[in-house]
Figure 1: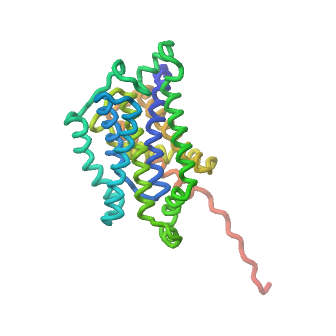
Figure 2: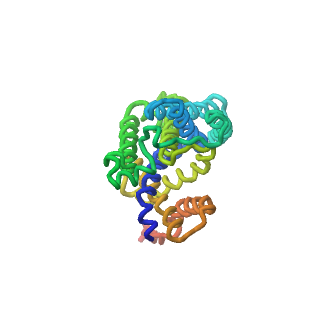
Figure 3: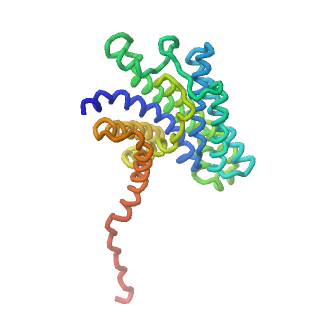
Length: 314
């Protein structure tokens, strides 16, 4: 239990970082009603671009901007496959994800891993900062939990503003009812393309933050991201769905879901001493359970007795 308590700041930080990725996935999975599997590739793309730009001498802001643009480009490819080639969204995402493996390897100079030295580069977040801030070696505003909280708040604030604009409302209308949206003069293909671009840009931003936090980018770092993202979305909806009705609060619920997911994972590792090789299986079970909860609630809820309609002749 002591190791679990000591690991809490790190678990919360990772949850917040992955929460940004889950927010990006939420835009396609819930807002657009599209199943986008690009995220497993675009997450690594963001990390790979961020690391390589910084290793080439770029500062952290340029590296993160480049990472976001690369993720947006990946989303645009998926959107092109889906809207212009008539390929179903789930298959279009798989094709882009498959191609991104080779692209990511090329970005990292054909190396499976590229490392960032925190002593040689100015990073926004780093695992080392957790201890250094606590010891007073770094200023409090460099504490990773605080930095990623601010980043998450900015993401949610910008998305809340954007989805209140005409373009954002068009994307939401496309996801709610594409036929009705087209009847209102909305170009649904443009809305889908824009939604996929924004979504994968956020996913790449999350990958860029994670590679800084852990100090390296690895070719398989995005594998299973779709499962973590879905877990965060579903946990957030099940636990906070009735409380958070506002769009901005729904995005915050996704971030909270990611934090809770990582707290559970950390508890399993630290307290239950589960072999980390079983984490993928554990993640799949978490998603399955939380997907089943709404169904169980409906089926196990006692049915209300139907009222008998009195006979008109009586």
